[in-house]
Image (cartoon, rainbow, N blue to C red):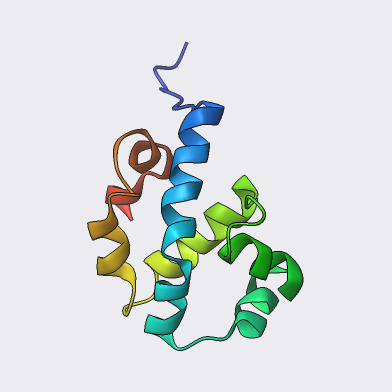
Length: 101
């Protein structure tokens, strides 16, 4: 029997992380200098969906959250902002094995 520890996030924890990222989406996009259209091509979602997420009219999916998180954490212009925001901490940091990459 292995000693692998699986980190799980509750729905409320996921919603908290999603909200934290949503609040600063325009700032992250501006820092990189990427348009909604360009980011939507990366995410694989429509611009209308993304716009609704960015303006708070729609909650982003967990899949979209993870994609954005990875995109912004691998971009030199936004990596430190993302780390300073506190989004990548606790269980999420453990789940993503963030410190080992």
